[in-house]
Amino acid sequence: LMSQALRKLTGIINKSRATVIFINQIRMKIGVMFGNPETTTGGNALKFYASQRIDIRRIGQIKIGDDIVGNRTKVKVVKNKIAPPFRVAEFDIMYNQGISYLGDILDLAAQHEVVTKSGAFYKYNGETIGQGRDKTKDYLKENPKVLAEIDKKVRDKIKEAQDA
Image 1 (cartoon, helix red, strand yellow):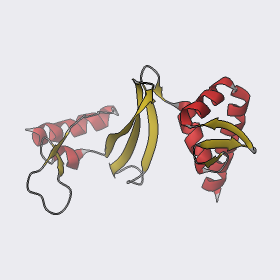
Image 2 (cartoon, helix red, strand yellow):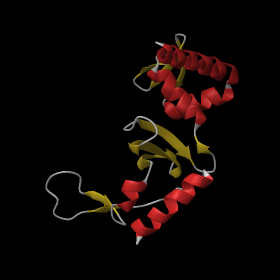
Image 3 (cartoon, one colour):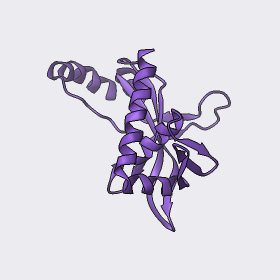
Image 4 (cartoon, helix red, strand yellow):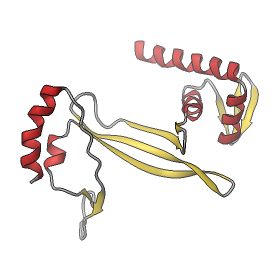
């Protein structure tokens, strides 16, 4: 059923230059000894016809006290006919806000050594800007000039890496 529908839909979707997003779930195959025991419902048609397949998983919860305010999320490109596949990204999704810009900047700054991280402490230009990720994000939120400096340095480092 799904393969017949997708066979008819792919031409129409291509002509109209539309994007179609299917959301699916993962089930566990019973008795699988080798390989991945996870499978998606609906057969193989969706896997075959998709131009891109993205695996999104929650890897942790973000809490303030006892309240859960967001999720730490890992996204992996499983299939990609348009660009290189198997890229992985991690980011915070905050409830009522979306993807956390401050968290992304902080992660990229630490990755590109704009901000140094030793234990739970984050340092920028030799000065401690926060202990723990949440406190450092709060510091960046309260100091937009420092955030702008870090943002510019991170963008410059990424651009240098792409040009090299």
